[in-house]
Image (cartoon, rainbow, N blue to C red; front, side, top):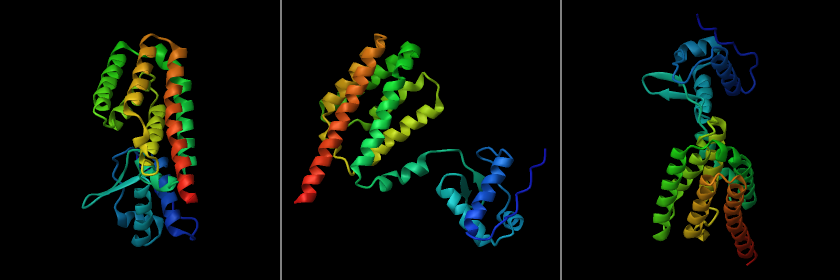
Length: 243
C-alpha cells in the first residue's frame, strides 16, 4: 500500500515547531516503524514548503528528543522509543532541588511496594535464583566497602520482570536512573553498603517464602533508608547554606 503524503504546513509562526509537528504526524499517519528511512531532505522540504535549513532545524529538534536519527551519508530514520533523551537532561532539571529527588523516590517507593505482591504470586524459581545471585554480588562489593549501582539496578529490574509489563519496567528504570543521575546532589556515600545489601537479601528471603506482607514491609523499609539519606543531605545543605 502506498504511503500517505506528508501534510503541508498550515501556519507560519514558529516554523521549526510546525516542521516537527508535520513530521510527527507523517510518522504516525503511516505507522512508520523504528528503522524506517524517511524521504530525502529535498523531498521533505518540498512537500512541507519550507527551506532545507528550516527542515534541518526541525529534524535536529526531533533528534534531541529521540524521535529521529540522522546517519551521515545515508539519511534520516525513525528511531526506536527510548527514555534516554529525557534522562540525559534529568540531572540538570533536578539541579540541587532535594525536594524533587524526594518526590522521585516516593513515587518509586509507592509503585514498587504496591506491585511487589503480584511478583510474589508470579515469580519463577529461576528469577528468584537470579535475584539471589545479584544479591550475592552486592554482598561481595559491600564487604569491600564498594558501591554496587549496576547490581542494584539489575535487582529492581529482576524484581518485576515476571510481570511482563514493559511500561512498568521502563518506569522503574526511569525512577532508578533519576536518583542516580542526581547523585551529584545527593551524597550516596552516606548509604551503608552492608545495610543496603542486607535490605535486598531480606526482600529476596520474603519473596522466596511467598510472604507478600513481609516482602512489602522489607521493600518499604529499604526505601525508608534511602529517604533518611536524602533528609540528612537536605539538613546538611540547609546548615551549609546558613553559614
